[in-house]
Image (cartoon, rainbow, N blue to C red):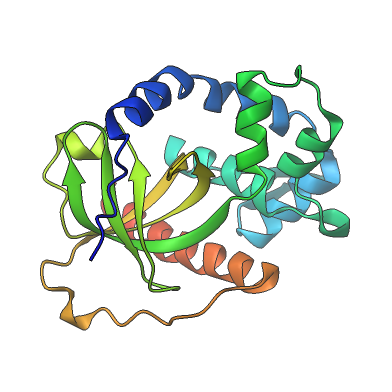
Length: 214
């Protein structure tokens, strides 16, 4: 069986580390495109809305909820079928060939799923099993390979990058599953609605888990 780890792993990791600081900057710029209706809709979907009299707002229990809300907002809010990330990419605000525009080309193809970490690569990545599709993928990452996280079940969003994948940064961890026999991938691709529902289901599951431990 061919290795999931790319042959040009050192080159990929070096480029990933160089580009990673641009991701949160791009996310902040994209989030600024959200109007009041986008914020209201996403807050309602994630049950983060709060009302004081006639004033409608949002309430976050911790900084992680804020990050996950932004991730949902810019990738899952799709008026007329176009996410905010795709809208930003289509506007071409950055020069052709720039790092930012190149990242946007991948980010608008992002998909959310549930992953089981099968193997860590100390140089900067991990082999994961997509529990929904059944695919094994190599995802670039800086933090998890430095920790004992083999067997971690987590939900996050990935997008294609060169010969591997990157993730958007916001993730929801559900604990270690040391024996993968109980994991039975569905072997299916999700449409936009199903992906959104999966995102929301995992957010509520994670929210209940994290609030119990705060």
